[in-house]
Length: 441
Ligand code: GDP
Ligand code: MG
Image (tube, rainbow, N blue to C red; front, side, top):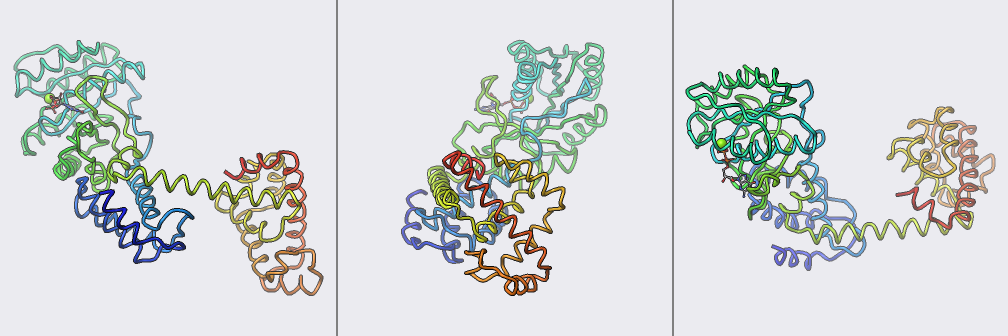
């Protein structure tokens, strides 16, 4: 794939803003990458469409090609889709004993994941965990969980032959309550395919225990099938999260994207092997890199962007040190403030400006005021912006009128520009630029 993409990059070498054609050409290859990673067709199509709208017109960072820039945009968009609410590994398991229901098809890795997760909850969170197998169909299944339990040092519910899944679930609940467990995990039976009997059974169990978490365990290598399974289970019993297993395999993990796009459920963990410690919290960055398979391009673009930002900061700093802080600079600062959540956000981070931020807030400097100030600056000519000291009464009147505001407002703005200029100059001398760079990050 990289070869194919570099071909695209060669063709797209002009700088500036991304044209619709640049984006389309690059996205054609990205689309292939997604499909090769086993992302389902409709999901890939929607995703590409979204990115296309987002990317067109964006500016291209110096020293990278438009194609590379598109890959970075795609990468960031992937992470956005993959990221679910809350911390990936955080489960709702307060109010002991908290039931966790494990569901999924046969062979997906439920029993293995139940034991892995129990181990993790015990060791990382210090929880007392009880596990119970509800798989009454395969005689070896209950033993399998019991053996794993011994291996990881987690209790399992004693096996009573001939009991129905619902009754085992009730017994587990009782035992967990009496035994003072924090969590009890129910490992349900799977089928090769979704069927009514399986679903009814899971539904009944779910009603009996009202699980705090219903985790769907699916084989991450099965791609499209995994997504259908997720949809079915979510419709019938409602799932709270997903565990993708076999992510140690060669698969590119496209199921993760389809899963998120289709069900909207958070992916909590990934299984990375058969061993009991091969369970990790889901990391969107890692999977995004894997789906796209272009990690080197992404870091290249990030590096280029960082360099540019550092250069810009350096240039600004040099000017501030010389006491050059004009209306263009102020406008940039004001825009930055709006972007970063108002006065408090930005100035609070600059050394020595915390007090000024508080004053500004007390004076009612909210977004509306910031926007009015930007309007005032926009109403100035180029020359006035660069040399605000030339503003006398008639110019002031014209500018204020142009922005639909009073001259007194403009005077406040001018005072602010002078004060900030002085402050910048002092800071520049004091910290030789380090501080401001820090503050602008
Ligand atoms: P269940 O039928 O859903 O309970 O599935 P099992 O837990 O019995 O797992 C079926 C097989 O998949 C077992 O051989 C497991 O060792 C294996 N397995 C489970 N999770 C993973 C994983 O993350 N990676 C790999 N490589 N194998 C796994
Ligand atoms: Mg099993």
